[in-house]
Length: 313
Image 1 (tube, rainbow, N blue to C red):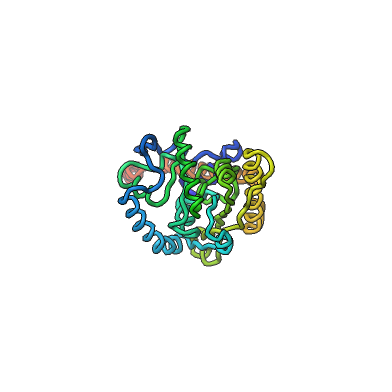
Image 2: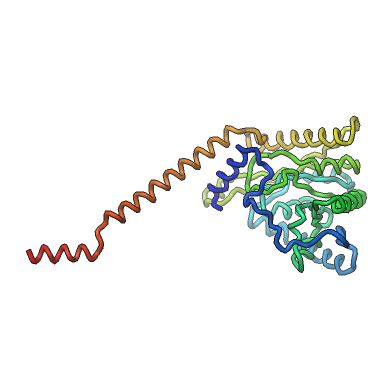
């Protein structure tokens, strides 16, 4: 999918209010590892613990190097992470890059953070084992799956770990606006009485990258932790916490980009669709011109026959 196709697809989904739909429209459910039955959300066996140890050591050493060279990635606001003083938390981040999970690990600590995601992302075989060893917590669809996930989150946050969620749900590559939040992350923050640590990924263009036609570099901002209010039912607390975090991230995004980043800014969507439509129309005209030229252009055989006829005449 080209950059223009991606922008057009995003604008179309925005206009329909389908902010939680993946760009490819197809869930990658092939060869998914079943998470029912005896599936353990946390590493229990010696082999799992050993695999987790060496894998995350590699990620800790080489992760920042990979993201810096490939994306120009930087992390800002580490003081807000230190302000937690080693306590557990729920973090939330805008889901805008295929490597954003690695960015989050680099920012919050490879051994400290666990990432949640759709159950079908964890595969059978070695790929699934490595994914799980990296701290992946699959979000299932049954009550039993959700109960085991909840127990795992409670245990992790009680031991000072951070569990990361992407409340926008779907991955929209290099999307610079903030989409509506699902409530799951905030429900767990209220239930286990831990703060929410907002993370915002910014795409910033520099003169050097613009000169060499490179993509914008990524900056992950760690914002101050947000705490739930104690008044109202747990559902109301989670809703208010979600709204508060969304407002904090929206204001932060506005300060970074110099424009509103809330999902309900539709004027930009219309301009993107119009721009894509004009580009499509222009490309179509070019193709038609080329086709017309080919039709009207005489073939080499016809030219030779014409030349022979002229000579004979």
